[in-house]
View 1 (cartoon, helix red, strand yellow):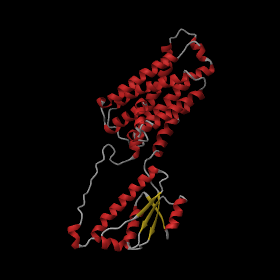
View 2 (cartoon, rainbow, N blue to C red; view 1 turned 180 degrees about the horizontal axis):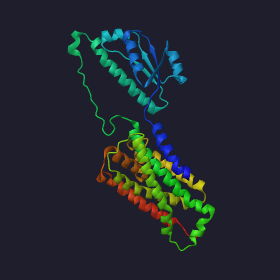
View 3 (spheres, rainbow, N blue to C red; view 1 turned 180 degrees about the vertical axis):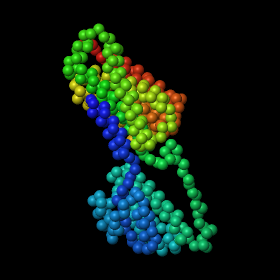
View 4 (cartoon, helix red, strand yellow; view 1 turned 90 degrees about the vertical axis):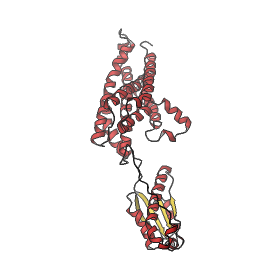
Length: 353
């Protein structure tokens, strides 16, 4: 248990926070320049200057380019048609061909956005050169947009992910430790000795779970310190409010762990069952994928997911500065969850066979 308590938190928060990224970089980019003019070279240079694309080569033919994409050597192909510059000057418009490897649909969508943005910026830059003075009356009016990003001005994915990873840190360790603890008592035979004592079930359970409640609160403290020192995650909300919610949330996880341990005989069984439910809870918590993008039936199931509420509360308090009234719905649902799970855990624990 000692490695789980002291090693796993550091590995989980530090490594996973850097690895779990939504950014798509180092895109392998190839192009087919059928025009070979200054305008086509300027367009390719826009991609070369981007930090997201690695411009690899100029393919002499479409067949070679398609073969390279089939082999996985290229992620994005840009095809510049013949007479690209001439048609721009004469017709005031032209078309480009873009082929994207969409095996990874999420990455392909991001790559499409990147390509579109670069082409649009290039389009705006060449308007001055392509359109003649006599064409001023037919030039479209350009609307400039100035975005304002709330809660994450630098668009740093770590700011969004670290609070969620911290939730996993507290959840997994307290769940595994509480689930394994009583099962280990069964394995070594000390549980039978405790059962013959006059101690009440509630007293025994409180004595068993309270140390892990303290460990969970300590893990939250360590995680918040690492989040601030290493990742510089803003903490706009109230720290006591985070500790208040976490203290109730940990009761939910401890109740689940105890409930699992009451029906298992070995630590391996407890770990497997706890991990089975943890994976489902994590995938449906909104940590990696927005709940709003899930099917309606999945969104309904997330209402019974305690991790969902913890992720929401941590992000609301840390990044938005939400107050008590803002997290009250999640707090009430979590308190009800804690009451039900601990009630089931106490009811299912038997001092006698």
